Length: 194
Image (cartoon, rainbow, N blue to C red; front, side, top):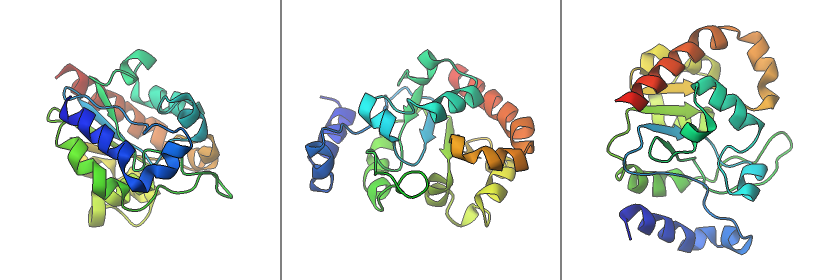
């Protein structure tokens, strides 16, 4: 059993996750020591949790397009470590899903990332990941943080969530597709080749 296997077993056995185990949920993340890109989002969506495949929804299709990778590349844990802020679908809210549970990333991310020595690029998808990882270094809003993406390069890049619910944001912020996405694709390609 590898250290990553032990971490997964500990995560499943954690009393804080008993509700997920009772629901038949597996923790939804992928990681291998050789991973080059860390992808940190908020929490699995319902479709992803039910299928057991991270980002297995319209948001995931959009995200893979932004990254400029195939499904095979994206789902290869030797290339991409997909480690959300919470490992289980948190439920439905009035608009979108319930936020990731507090304390999950603090408890588990250090153990997981200690086993991933070859990460070259960390992609922070959405405000929860950005708040946790950028701390005071983030801007006043998600839009300002993403617009200032160059401030975090070359090791980290913040993104807006690729949810279909964000169509209005994209209409108001065309610079994202024009400036951020091409840079993201370049960074991902370089990280995967290194």
